[in-house]
Image (cartoon, rainbow, N blue to C red; front, side, top):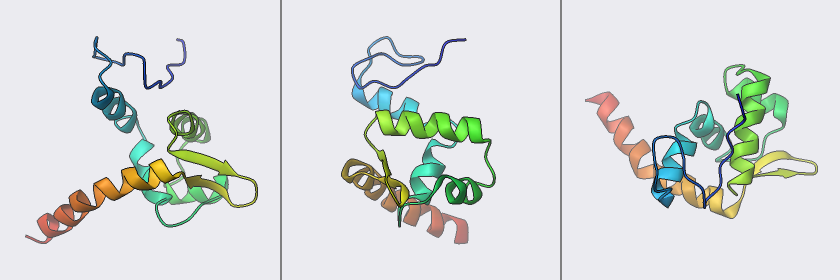
Length: 109
């Protein structure tokens, strides 16, 4: 099976149009993508620390998601600090904060 990569100009699974929102939702719907972004929201993490934060996710799957997120421009690999969010990645995480706050209220109700 060929590796599927994310490109902002290509179609995605289940979409013939390749509309940007569909490309983004496809990427974010992949296993561990959202968790990686969430764990990187406060500070960069090394591969080992990120894997631990992601409940010991498979190194192969974790690396594949990191590659996808780097290609999409949300994550970058720093020289000393490990993986961190780009400005675009931070902006994406900020868009999830209202959903996070809602989920916290919902959990308590």
